[in-house]
Length: 131
Image (cartoon, rainbow, N blue to C red; front, side):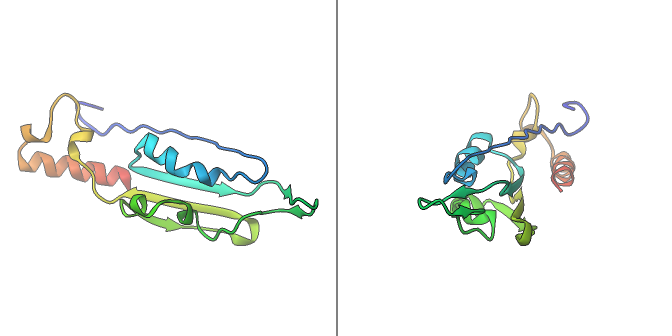
């Protein structure tokens, strides 16, 4: 709330593809478009595809972490942790922005209008909410 608390916004996006195109290839674009402070990325191989000779492939690309599909420049901005269930082809990565600009969280004013105590109190609320 702009007067006495922290306002959060959430977007849930499902991306599905068929065949050889992996939704992981869209991560860089999606991350840049939403400029998120917190991301929880889930990837699950749900179906199968076939190679050119008709052989069924349950998973047609190598993966041991979603982080492998995120450019290093973006990975450097976030603390990331993986929770994967390899035998079920389920991959989960949690990401939290390492540093943030307090002005992105203020409504109608900027941090230069606040004293140091107010800045610290608001930063603590933002960090708590992010955690």
